[in-house]
Image (cartoon, rainbow, N blue to C red; front, side):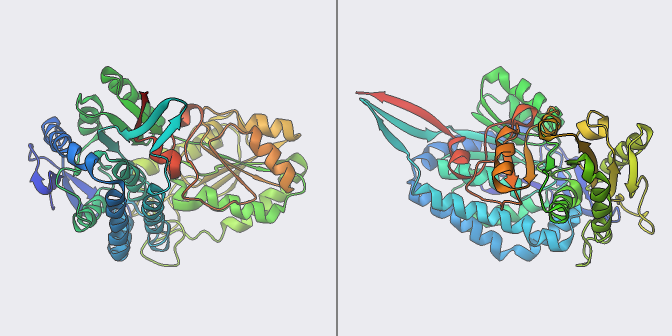
Length: 469
């Protein structure tokens, strides 16, 4: 598949000879090459998906689920190759890329296959028969921060639902999509059911969003890009599911295990170099615990070793690109200029790491909750600590951004649950709740619409028909 798209079950050269280099952010070397796709490439892929749709939709649910399960098995067999590709294309430390980056999508594929037999595909409602049927052709547009997970989170439910798919992976991190394609072939997907068109959002993403023969867009990425996709897709009134930005808050209540809450919260702020839409980059603490929280956070941050992502000792690798590093660095400098108290890290490269897209893990304290670094999505290893006067103030601060994707609450269980119910976010973890592949994931406000995972994620890819009798 080198330098090719995947259309109608075969590797296909692009309609344009232009290519895109995939840059290893650790050293600036070229990790791979993909074609710069065109609208003509999208047309061809959509045509293949449209032709394959009737046959795939008519395939039994059990057969579709079995195919998705085989894809998960194929990914597991390629764990080492997938982890190496993820580390090379976006800089995730090898310990993270070989676990979360690969384990999560395998779990999603397996759980979606299991769910297929339990899902209520038809329902009796009075005198009506309500059926849930595939939408048609799904355009999936995915980001670079979790390049395999974000694809499988769309592909698995779309296929189980009976849809066909045209995928545009991020041009920054497209290499895992090629390995995934091998798994879909071995899983026995019919030709045209899964298609991949590489390229930029401005060209391929626009063409997918506007295409009249695509019935649904499922997008994960920035809120800015989500607005554009929704606008373009409105021309054909297709369904649009958006999983967008976040600015999660970690609310620590009086009576919480402060050290444990800060350690868990710092992990949620710095994981994947902070390049996680569902991270918690804002730490909210009672005012009387502010100084102690700073000491604990700074002490814990010292364990986050920055370095070569292929070294198992590394906890934070490079950011995904030099352009993104410069953006994060700009926010750190903005925080200093706006008067936030820098207590760890700061702007510039870490010592001895000037040859890649490395940033210094950074902590600000005494942060104005309405300042730029507390309100805007930085998408890097930057934690802000803000003191609050009482629980009502904490809830108000937590809900003050335009985002509403995730948050965390630590404290006495009943009080923490009461605060979790007040937070305007699609997912709230109480005292470090564990990830559940069956639970719905998605955002309030400008963090998007629609849900992924479990029965709610499957329902996103289905139309509902009422048959009156």
